[in-house]
Image (tube, rainbow over all chains, first blue to last red; front, side, top):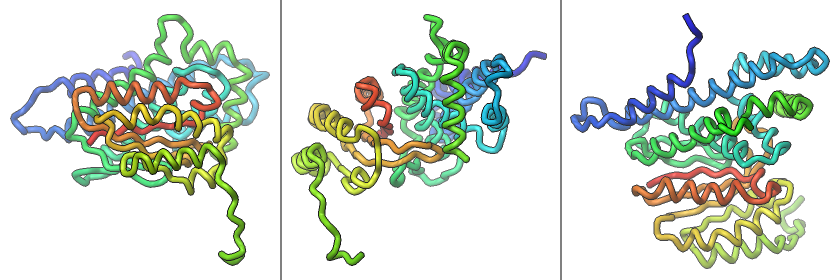
Length: 188
Length: 123
């Protein structure tokens, strides 16, 4: 049986968000909270796979202790923070608006996903660096926004021009190894 | 150190100007001067100057309810950023408008855009 493709989670999100069920049998905010989580996990898991597969091909000469710790961290207790930290460092090294958009998208999606799954108040709150802000998952605007944020990650993963994250990892090996070191140093 | 012993340093120029913009747009623009002052961010004056130049156009839009400017490191993040929290009136165009705003913030000079994070909200 082939491995599971995390794009499947995005397709579930697409399906749920297209439902026009006005019967109230399934509350709209329950659908939208689920959609948020499916798009986030699809983006997160695809990013992790591209990183893991790209880094697998690195020569032994570049695989120091930090490198190996990073590979372990991608499967460890908090791979979400590891991925976001890597994008945060990478955007400062490679001048590409798509990396900035993907980083901002992952920070935003992660906060929305946490609120969608854990905060049961009618108006859940997302954490921001200096506090929190209320969101309303009954609003379709949040579904549309999450779809846009997902598309920025997808754009970095599947760029038709061939200049995608996998290529960046393959071509800029020394920069990527330096980013790994810096991301890990801050996370430890 | 006693409160009376504290030396009041003059606010950096761009911070003064952003603060002036806040007075002009009371209730719609909220600037957390304290966090902006105490958070060390590379090219902070450049970032604040950029915001001061682009924000009036956005504050003028009726569909923009509120823009907050603050600073800090997001949960799980590693570097402090200037953080923009933009609240839009929930409508069919709100998401497109928020994307336009975010693109303007994230596609500027990398010294500016690399240290900006935007959270768009709809209400």
